[in-house]
Length: 585
Image (cartoon, rainbow, N blue to C red; front, top):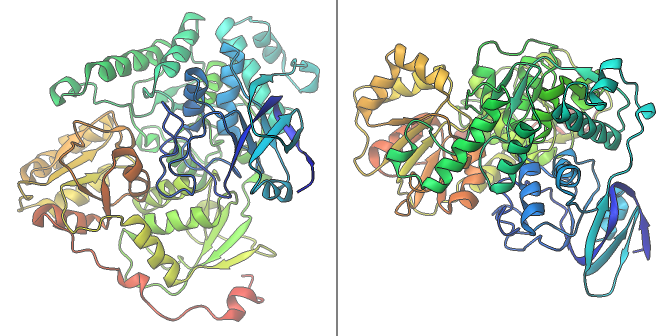
């Protein structure tokens, strides 16, 4: 490689250390231990290595919006990388650094390189960053130093109210929020702000003391949301955590963090599926949502408009009602940039949708895909919810299109798009990746990641009617309080209880550990592509991935009979002329 490579400093500074390079994006939430900095994602090439004190070079983040939360925790506990190097703009991890710098004067350099220069870093053992430059360096380290430039309001097209917010006319919390929003706009190249009408807070779960310190700081500064705002799932079921045996330290810290957001006016909905709440966003409505699955569902299925909000940017926007005018808020950034063609499919079940979403995310880590070949399939909102959650696990993109199904792709212009053919072998390989268990035994059936809808609970109740689960298998469903109340009123909860199943409210499987996932559990069955990905690293168990009906069968039998589905094995592919030729319909 060249002796010195020039990039663009998203956050300027100096740092040096051992270079940790990968050509695959990394979700810090579920992929990096926030207490140690060790990569725990079992699907990532850096698994087992520590990012602490390293110059970490990855193409971008991916998956969860909570990467900013983990980045902030690492900064505050001393286990952060020495610097971050990307080849795609990466707002989520960068926002965690911005928060640390602005509130607590702790930060690291963040550098953006062109793709060819990023690839040239591979094999470099040590690197030094100085402003916009990165170069090979002798072995050793250098204490990271980072700084934010002074904000020049004249560089933005701000309204009188924006300027008043910057001048603390509505309080110190709003002033701080506006400064951070403008720093994000500066980094992303946006010159204007827009009004948003509702928000959903993702970073409300306790992952360490830094997050609680952040929320309390906003409360101390008088923070109050200016738009209707809801709250994501937290680490505990607030009504039952003590009876479940959740450690008091986690339970009380989770309570304190949730109450800090309630004190700022956030509605305690405790769900990772805010699109199931009333009212749901309308087509074209501009919102500010965290939680990756909610973001892609809102943009792709509902036709609303939101960025893939990093944790903490959502509350900052809610405090002001203003957001940077960029990405999926703008028409030009909602168009597909990659076409994916499916092989002939027949007889698909509900497991097909999360599996395909997971695969599509891997094939389009930083592109907005349009999937062709599903027009004949009866894709419900529940199917698209499962697809989107798995897609958001492996992609950094904020939306997808499905030709003939999602509102932005009823008659899409596909002319000139790069194209890729998905094969049955690709589907089969993804099936094997999501099924990590080597024993057929099942100890726990985990449902509701994202939170189950009323129609999913009704489908489960029908599968459970007149049956009893195996006495040594637990079946647990996570759902929001509002949906649970509706299911209870409809008699669905009673039917599932009769089967032996039970419900959790307020919390989500990505946040659940012991005692619910106890040490005696070896194998977990789930119909969630998202949990089949994150679960092995989060709880240290092996996973079976299957359809809902197959999961219920496993709950009854105590073991999984989960062969490769027929839709993974079919033959008959689109012709080479269709995939690579002139069919641009």
